[in-house]
Length: 289
Image (cartoon, rainbow, N blue to C red; front, top):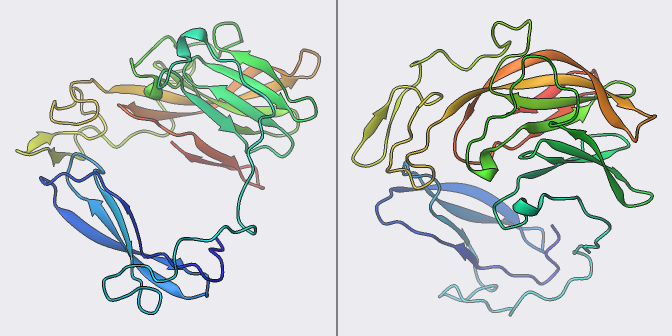
């Protein structure tokens, strides 16, 4: 980012500090408007409760700053070379019950050469976006579209951010797309997942203070009450099922004729599971569950 020719940044601070946590420093670098690197310290919480504190202190030597660290060049000037414009071009339908804050779970699938899809991960729906008309069209609904035999998408976790019935999707070959559905059961003809989590009780750890031992971080069962997020919740073992769907050009691009080709075990716990995925030039799929 070009910060401008006469820009000086001394300290940018974002703090939510818990005195019960031990803290450690990591280092990043920033480039100022004169092309000089300024070291920065990131104050990061290392306690088991998670990331509780972030603080950025950028070293600012004279003449940019005085001995106390105060700015000498004034506030950041308006810069016409850096900026962005947000323009509303369309909308995606949302269930009436999911319009309140933290009640929906949406994802944009933008890893396609000439298409853009929006996923309602919680409700199990996919919408295609037409850039020429700014219209969105529903092309998949787990309650009405064809689902591979054996899958159970009726599970729910109780928290919108952790409900992933359609996890993600990416580009397929020709008139196909790859959709990842999250099921509580294996598809027919699969007796086990192709990619499994580590064997049970392989990785355990102490959590909280005073320490409590979890035998298996991937199958922790009931999360200890000392957790700030999700304490008392019970984790699940689900399956991310990779499915090739055809795009029906005669039916508004509806996704049809599913074919399962890969299954991965996944731990479901409080929090958002992302949806990072991309199809490589050789056809392989890069996936970050």
